[in-house]
Amino acid sequence: MLNLSHIKSIAAKVGFDLCGVTRCQKFDSDMTFLEHWLAEGYGEGLAYLERNTDKRANASLLVEGAKSIVVCAVSYKNSFSCGYPASARNKIASYALTTDYHITIKRMLQSLCAELKESCPTLSGRCFTDSAPIFEKRYAVEAGLGWIGRQSLLVTPQFGTFVLLGVAVLTEECDSYDTPYIGIGCGECHRCIDACPNGAIHNHHIDTRQCISRATVEKQSDCTTPLHGWIFGCDECQSCCPYNTKTPLATNPLFAPTIDPLTIDWQKMSEAEYTLHFATSPLIRTTLQRIKENIKLTTFSAD
Image 1 (tube, rainbow, N blue to C red):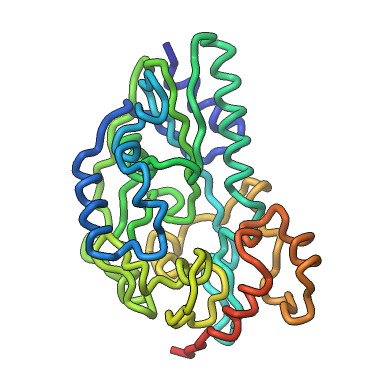
Image 2 (cartoon, rainbow, N blue to C red):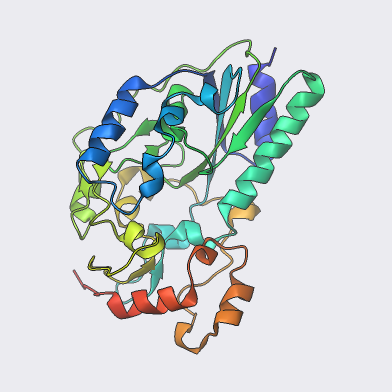
């Protein structure tokens, strides 16, 4: 059997800022919402969300015999998370200024699980960070980390929305589990909805047809979505969130910025240089040609 305090101690040691543990369970209501959301066309450009929907609602289909879900979060807030200068163009979402979190968090989770297995040899499981169909944010709520905000992101009291999640689906019971988060939440605040320049944010869900992040990151053709200065991702709905304005900058050096977007001359860069410089960056998901296309497409607004 796993020990809750032991899990959290290891999570902190390997570099996570938050950790919670909940039971493996099914989320039928979330599945119903997702199916309706997809049917309404809100998930355009995210075809992967239509695959393995049964597994999203039931993590035991990902790991046979799954009993416990460990949800970890790490802050990545940096100076660019708070907003770019008014004159800035060619903006990049702040999560993409660091080493690719898929790589970093996966290694942290693997270290956590390896140490847990030392004290529990029968333990098995799998680690995920945006790499499997699983309701990560819902499990984070059930594990007591925070709530899902109007902009559909997890909001944590300690670090706001500038957190990245990792999930370990494990086959052993825990001696105790965290209490699901119950708090004030977003209240009457709707700044994220007002801040989105394309009106992509509805109440607790996104219309990806208007989302700048989807338009600049995901594979697509014939982009007609106004980009408002963003060439990879978008932080507009986060920079304005009251829970983000007073939260501390990230302290884990693994999530420190490795890119200064204000100093990059994209036009002078070659594809080979792009691949070399951004091999371990989230920017490797796209190409220099796509970045240059986004620069041409962007419609800067001073508002």
